[in-house]
Length: 496
Image 1 (tube, rainbow, N blue to C red):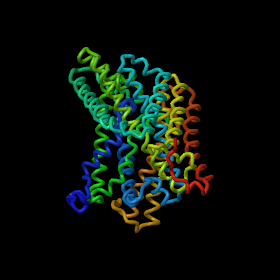
Image 2 (image 1 turned 180 degrees about the vertical axis):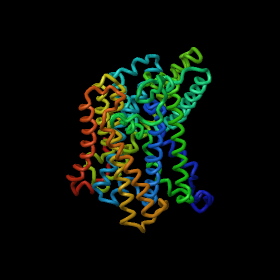
Image 3 (image 1 turned 90 degrees about the vertical axis):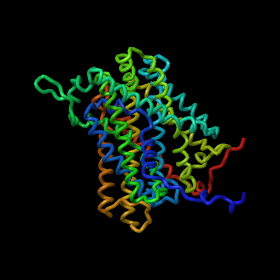
Image 4 (image 1 turned 180 degrees about the horizontal axis):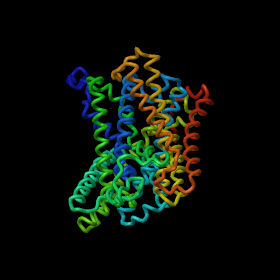
């Protein structure tokens, strides 16, 4: 059939509704149940932390990214284009580098959660607390996934499509149901039995849950950065604002839907963990699994469902971590046309996969995973890597907020499919709030958390600071020493 014989509906542009894009964005944000124990350790003060992340980070980031994505909807590159147009190609390259490298640094945390799931799934839960097992699992599973990605097959992406439903939504719903059954059966509620002054207030010899955090120093707020990381990634869907029929009206609705869904899933899930487990038994690494174990044992006198659920959660965590294995690196490869990458990093294999970049990120992920070998306490290593990740991501977000403000000033007539209302005042309010929120989270990320035994606080600070400095300096050096010949070098497939 010729092109003129095709039905008219095939050329009709599809549009996204506010509900569809809102749920799509929520699925991007909520990739696994990994963050629930961290929130649960804050007991009822979690509402302050989650509210901070939702109102002062998730919503501003979504609105700002929507305006920038709509303004440059006809160009690829995302933050590379947005920040490059606002400031310079150098900073644009730095921004997309940070977006890529934070994913690489983040993988060991997602994979460590999968390692705990495997440990419980095979009936050897003690392995989840073994730093050697977790470190080796992260390294081996990452390289296995890289090998699959290099074949050019989309099998990994197809398999992980079900990860969100089977490995996150289903176990999350079961967790919530168990919490309701736990409370109905009259069992002790975790936050009502806690006595730690960090989460309780003592009055007349009785302890009552705190509603506001006990701030004894910035170290007591260190979990804020880790909780913020759970809400990151909203900018990934911002470019879809151009596919909405009325973006000015519908995109804010989509962002509020995404915020409400994310808030509900994280809050209810964390409350379930905090209700079932005593405060001192909540582990960042295994909290979800010990919650299942405690609930099924006390309510039904069985434990075998824990192994099935652990394997499902492992599947979800692997999906959340590995589905993005090749995506961010392809975004980095896209900058090669502007001569930002040396020829050896531009190489692709015969399947069109960015071989050199995938191998480099595999080496980096391996080195980061080795942090588990340095700390016997897996939870401490887990949080340290999370802190390194959020510092890198926050630098990119601060650049994004600043770019939005600058473009409103320097290019006010730039066509925008969605525009934050209120003129320059509205932009300063939204982007300013977002900038200050992430800047505060950036500062507290360098303080060792009071809730964890970090060993040497100075070592902790040095590692987090070194990660932020080194990974931010690398793109600046690459850009500084780039050569004109790089721009002529196009990504080419290697010949056998």
